[in-house]
Image 1 (cartoon, rainbow, N blue to C red):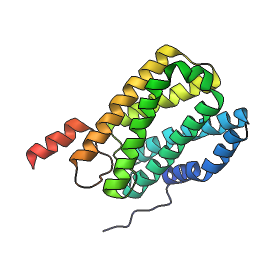
Image 2: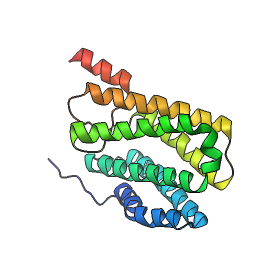
Image 3: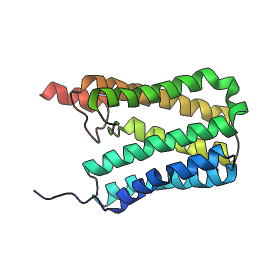
Image 4: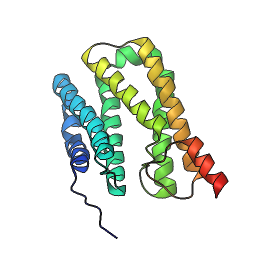
Length: 192
């Protein structure tokens, strides 16, 4: 049995996002919106790159999945902080739907912490697609403007993805990394 390497490029990119979290948060809290936006965009790009590199070059590991999940959670927190600090007026009319979105994100993470004693690393297809949609929404929001139609697409997909994530966590007995989705979980339960 070989030991998996922790010093891979995807892991270093995830680690970068974790290490820079306080810097990006400080930029937001101190009102430096331009610095915050640049650093958040770098985080979003490194999030895309770490997953792509890991899959393309067969560098996916359990450690990497966990590290990526920690970095993803931090990036979500940063995006939420930026929205509340810099874009609150645009979000006021959408407070109910955005609160549901954030609540489901929090529940998905808290449920995993309570049930499995760690952040989730399921990496479901719906979660990945949602991450791309949300990342592009955050990019568009902070670099260009708020677009209501795009917001509703992001919210709708996010709520579905977070709900699937929660449902799967309720169904499985131990946290597993890189599951595909509810269909595959149900299919594997029938064959057991």
